[in-house]
Each structure stands twice: as C-alpha cells, then as structure tokens.
Image (cartoon, rainbow over all chains, first blue to last red; front, side, top):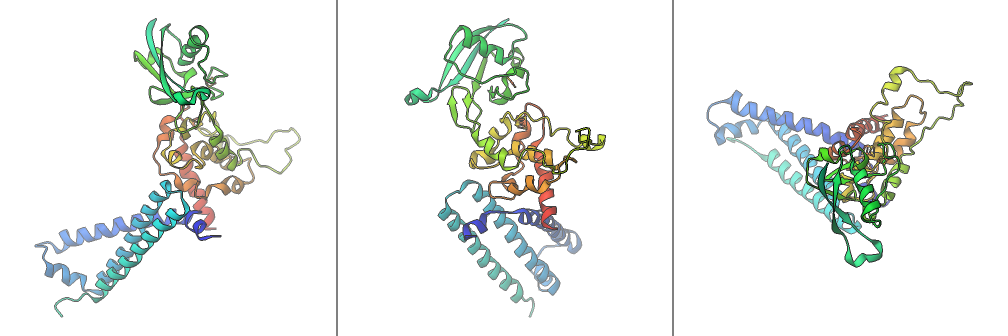
Length: 120
Length: 237
Ligand code: SF4
Ligand code: FES
C-alpha cells in the first residue's frame, strides 16, 4: 500500500470516531458554558477563570478538548478537501499541511495548559 | 389545450463546434399529455433530428429521465400542463456525458452499480419448488428498496458525484442495501466490499439531493445511513 492509498481508502472507523468526538465536543462545550455562566456566576474575570484552569481536573479536560477538537475539525477539513482534490501530489501537500497544523497546535496548546499556573 | 413553449437543450456530436444550445419549439398541448408525449409530437411532426430516450412510457424502464424545469424527473410521468409554466425547459440529466441532445451516457452509473454486485448471492440450491420463501416481515424490509428503476436521476443530482466522477453513487448504494437487507441473500460482505473506499460511502455527506431527485420517491440517503452502520459494525467485529 503506498502512502497515497493509506490517506484515502477506507474510513469506516474514522467516520464513526468523527460522530463520537462530535458528541464529546458538544458535551464538553455544554459543561464549560454551564460551569462558567451558571455555577460560578458573578463576574467573569481573568482571576476567576485562571483559578479554575489551573486545577489538574480542568487541565486534563481542556487538553482532551484541545486534542479532540483539533482532530475533529482538521479531519473534517481533510474530508472536504478530499472531495475536490484528486491529483496525487496535491493531496499529499494538503494532507501534510493539515497534519503539520495538528502537530503544532497540539504541542503549543498542550504546553500552555500544562505550564499554566495561577497565583503562584 | 394550451400553447406551450419547449426550450430544449441540444447537442450534436457531429457539430461539436456549435456545442450545447437551446432550441425552442411550440406545441398545442392537449390535456393529459405527458412531457414525453410532447417530445414525441415534436419529434414526429416538427423536428426528426431531436433525440431522447424512451421505451416503456409508463415509468418502469427509467430511460426517459431528464431535467425538466430544473428538476430531474421521468418525462413519461410528468404531466405537461401540471407544470403550470408557459415555457418548459428540458435538459439532459446533469453530471453525465451528453451523447446527443437529451441522451446521456450512463456508463458512470453502470460502473458504480457493478461495483456493488447488484444481484442475489445464494449458493444454497433452492428448495424443490424452486422458490426461495421469505417471511412477510423479511419482505417488508425491502419496501422502498426494490422499486428502483435505475433511471440515474439521483446520482445526476449528487454534488459528491459532480466532484468525483468515480463516486459509486446513490443509485448503487440503494441497490447494495436492497441485497444486504434481503433475507435470501447469503453474502452481504460481497455487496459491502466496494463501499469502504475513497470513491465509496464516505464521500456521501448526507446532502439529500438524491432523495429529492428520485421520481419513485425512494430514499437512497436512508439506505446509505444503514450501510454506514453495517460497515462500522463489520469493522468492530
Ligand atoms: S433511486 Fe430513484 S432516482 Fe435513483 S436510480 Fe433508482 S429510481 Fe432513479
Ligand atoms: S419511458 Fe420508461 S420510464 Fe419513461
């Protein structure tokens, strides 16, 4: 199997995963909104948010949100490109750009989350 | 009776320089005339060079599918006066190569169809009375699936097909599911095999154009959803 085939054939499990991650993202988003605007209440200030974001539970949740949102969004974009781009080299190029965006954002996002401290 | 104008998209392969052009005809249309009757009348009495396909003239063979006033439909099942327009625009089905005038090449949909093995696979010899019986419930599952006449209207309306001419197509997916859902068929895998492919099921983005285009009111999108479930279940063992 050449790498062009690897990128393009199949897709059953990815399709299914895209559905699951969609549900996960909607759930997390809801938790975020409820937490921020209902449970915490009051004024939304940097201090209020930072305090929450600095806890290990929220760090884990945010990192999972980051990675899954990146996967869901970028894989979705790849599927759209795949519809219209049929030339082998163009596919490789677009795929590489999307993969690069995924890697860079995952690294920076995760680092930001892990190192974030509040009031320290 | 009403005097209607027919604006027909024409193309002559022997005069390719002229390309596609619209030609207008006028016809006094009697009550009860279908668009196919009108086309016949025009061909027989006004212009013998006009080409279109038809065979059964009763909505069974699928030959006369064309784009009438922008909508894919069977000419023999469309009442001309019921369209309620003074000008009726007729074009060949979109997305397929035009052979001449309203005649398109259906090679792309035959390719997709063959990929899903559109026939019953059953290696067990039939019982002595030569009939493979099916319970009424099992037969019920084929409603909305077996009626497809392969007119090609659905695939012609599908944006995924416009973007990828090797896309297997909703007509073939519906046919695949017609056999996957049949209790008498023994090899669902054989029909599903071709679908998990870059030109296969995952190119469907649930646009529903096929549902809207089908002159038989079938629902290829539902069949596609069922097939997606089958494939995912198959992958998970
Ligand atoms: S599903 Fe409907 S539109 Fe598509 S080929 Fe069959 S009858 Fe025609
Ligand atoms: S002529 Fe057969 S479907 Fe119209």
